[in-house]
Image 1 (tube, rainbow, N blue to C red):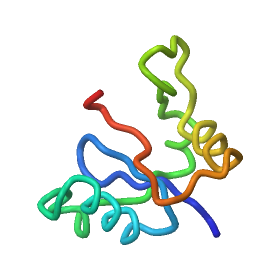
Image 2: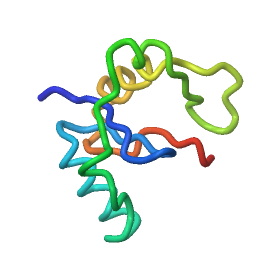
Image 3: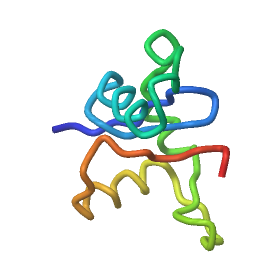
Image 4: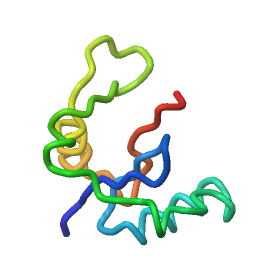
Length: 90
């Protein structure tokens, strides 16, 4: 199983095996009307972007980490995918 990160809209990223699985999980989590354009506009985050995009583990985190590092931590922790990965909204 290969886990990748997908950007579903301007604000949200999900991690999972496929874009389709992430869209489905996203709609289950927030409603069928969410991510309306994700089939056409959603995409896998490139390897380069995984190394440069940053995330904070939680609101108390001072130091951001790369998407690549965060995904590796989730996989190592045995996270069940697909999973909500990041957002610019929080």
